[in-house]
Image (tube, rainbow, N blue to C red; front, side):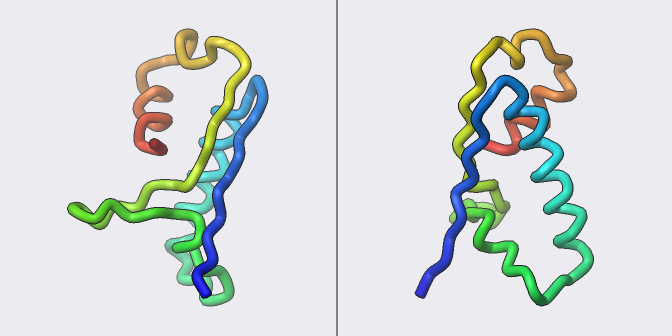
Amino acid sequence: MVHEIVTLQIGNTSNNVGTELWNQLDVEQTHNNTLIDYNTYYTYNKKTNIPSPRVLIIDYHDYLMNNSNSQLMVLKSLN
């Protein structure tokens, strides 16, 4: 049976909290924890085999318009 997790990030700070979550998952994944199957959190691009989070982000205000370009780059990489 295939197990997949879709993360819902909803609210005014959903982008901030979500970025921290995905960054922490990246850190933990490098520790080779055999108890957690990180593939359930990611989907892989068929051409490049690069993982992307399975996430739906709903933000209630114009956070993206008021943030720096460096933060925008992080958020774009999550899509």
